[in-house]
Image (cartoon, rainbow over all chains, first blue to last red; front, side, top):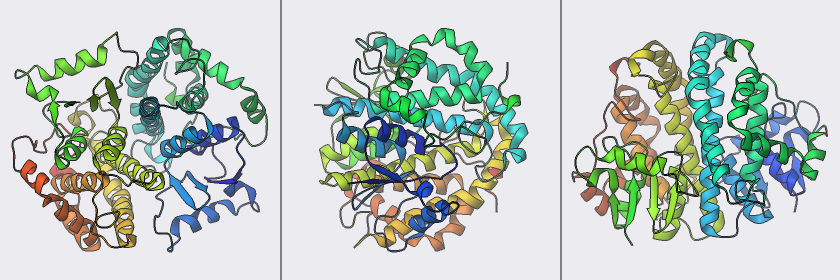
Length: 241
Length: 241
């Protein structure tokens, strides 16, 4: 079976957390909105979102089609893929533990997005610049250290490392790699300063990047670059000293 | 076994989504921060959050202790309770469907919270009033109709009703009850206007409220009133016509 991933074609966004898992386990998948004729991607997604015939309609991408099943929400898709492809613990307690971690990653990602869109996701950045500056300032001062410190603590208490669960990677490790990469793109100054206090997290980032299937993926054109339409955006004025 | 729920003692907040599930299935639980001496609640939570000896440390409440297992994140706790106590479908596909719905409820709740705290959750409302007015305006215009419309559509496509899955309630129905109740408290004018277009959702709210165990709970002192420290706050100036 070939999975179908539905996500906006021009940003890594939340779709990237799914791609990293699919690529790491070498699952067959079609990146639907990027595989048709140029420009047709968003229309294919909208057709699925507006499809009147679906008994269990989705709210928003990313969406994963697995046979007849359509799965919504990043953490939920990873819960499904992790169990199927060995990126999650075999025991139920372990799966709940990493699902909780992934939901904390999701909260972190939402707050990162809000640094540039604190008023409304439907408005342009230019229309909420002043508010973004305030939000980003508070984020870098209070929330960034809190989230990074939390995951650093989890790694410090992990029995062997280098991954969250020890020697075997889970989908949360792949997601944390993406968050660190995105933060380094968006806030290079703040992240350079944070590096010293989060060595385990940065080592995790380096380790994930070198996993053979991911290294090949990251060097391929399938990997989308960070840009100023996505979650992790670089605006010089928000990367406050 | 008696569950232990760890959540701030003076607000319904995210803890209430867990309480509704526990009460509906008549599970035995201790509401830890509300059952000790007055004023001791937050300290009991902080001890758990800062407990250096925990191999799998939690990030934030609500937390559920089930025997030796400590479960984090609202949707994750509900995933666990739902399967154990018959508030979730028996098939894996059905459980993923409602987990996706619950995560969409979580996104909705986060956006509702941001209407009064768009700059930082650590600052007072008074310090972000102007930004809150802008955020709430956009929320009521764009996001409230989008989320309510989505859940109304899900109900319209549900085979029999009145619940999301048909004749049997799931934990998502209980959470939607809480969201509707909270929105009616926070935005009475906007919700009165929205009522006409979301009849199924309001019927679901009424139906959940009348479930015998929940009706008894809602009339008891265990049910905390909405107030201006929580997620759903009523500020006249944000309930824009």
